[in-house]
Amino acid sequence: MNLQKINWKIYFKSAVAAKPDIFFKVFNTWIPDSPEIFVDVADYRHVHDGPLVLLAGHYVDYALDHTDRRLGFLSGQKGGIQGDLAERIQSSLLEFLKAAQRLEKDPAFGGKLDFATNELLFIANDRALAPNTSATFSEIKPILYKILSRIFESKELNMEHLPNPKQRFSVKITCKQESDLKQMIDRLS
Image (tube, rainbow, N blue to C red; front, side):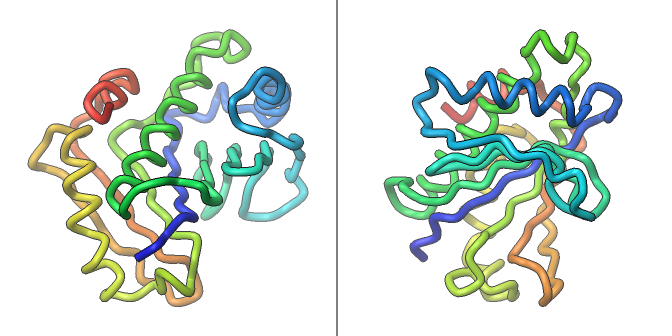
């Protein structure tokens, strides 16, 4: 499967510090001097059940996202990832975790931005290559498990396919143990 459009979402433990105005300002600081070519920051608070603030780039987008009424940080890889499917998934996850860590450390949030590191959402943003079916889940599940078991270091890793035919292929990943982002990045690197 030549999947390139890979999305990841991590949720906040508390949404207190996840203010759209702060994300808008912080995302604007990411535009200059970035290896990614970022185009613009957009305020989408008027959109129901979707991104609130979007940092648009050539190869990846980042968002403060409120899809399904769950506030979190979302990345959307658009392409240009090298390697086989496992390498592309791992690479996209690693870059996503690094971006989340960058947000967590940003002084604009006053040290109060806190991610729930025991839950992730994987989304294949390509309905033609990855239809939301059990067959797609059967193909991707062993790859996800191999990668995610490294960062969670737990046998209590759970992956649940969210089979809504009206939605993109999605897998909810949970683990009883939490890790900090640095540990997760180190285990994946």
